[in-house]
Image (cartoon, rainbow, N blue to C red; front, side):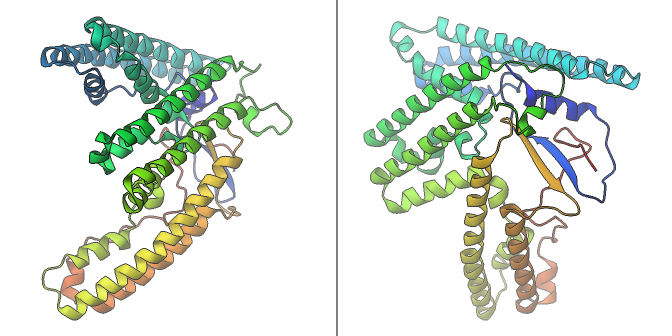
Length: 404
């Protein structure tokens, strides 16, 4: 299977920091992995969830927790071995031995993935071994959930990575006990599971290209696109989530369904919905105890107006992000951003400019409404970029500049 995303991630940990160029540059980032080289997502919470599906008794749950601790120790050892191998590659780079860098990184990544996959298989096998025959009949649901835990986060669509089961339990926990809602959720599980299994088969069939420049497949218009079939499956998973939310609306009603959809978007695009500095300061202002009636009325009016306008901007931003995802030809997990002089205008940058303008208005109104002492008590304003501005992490493991 082609490991472009995993190799980009490793390359970013190895390449040295570069000075920011003032001209237009390209930044590659790894958001999620394309395949088996990504970190294990199994947690104690995962095991507790599986225990609930299987209806384990307390003794079995204690055994499951012990098994997970053994698994976690093995995962730590695998991570230590991975870091040691990466350091050896880094040392060789310092000595100028970089001829087969990408191939060696792929070997290191694959070794870690194989070790963790084996540990996960052992954990699941041990869990299943202690089940009663009745509990074993429930095992397929654990397998489906495990595949989601392991693979859903690899999707190239942000909303496809949101687990609808978790979303429903978090936003409307009472609805999970409704038989109609449970059936709608079960149908979503089955559709997504089939899609993830197909995705895994197709990803495994993608052949390694000759040479080391794996990323070139993503930008060469003349090359066959081996990732198109994976992105098409991701689009199906996203569409299945959207249709499931519409079906749940018939069970929950309009208002709860609207809250569920909003939560879906917020989880898919957390950066879009992250409160800005001025929004946080406005909420803090509304919590001031010694506001007089006129101040409180002005602040409430400011908040209501801002929410209405900011919601519209964020909705447009999300629509733009989804459109970019639909048009992307990058491998799953790899993004390219243009930054610096001549930066292209995008839905992200336009939204950032618009929200920055709303923030300035909030700050101006806060200064006009509050006293100096009240302003002093607010959280300090962040010196952060506009929400829509992409900020490359040049010295970290998430971004590397490849042009100037």
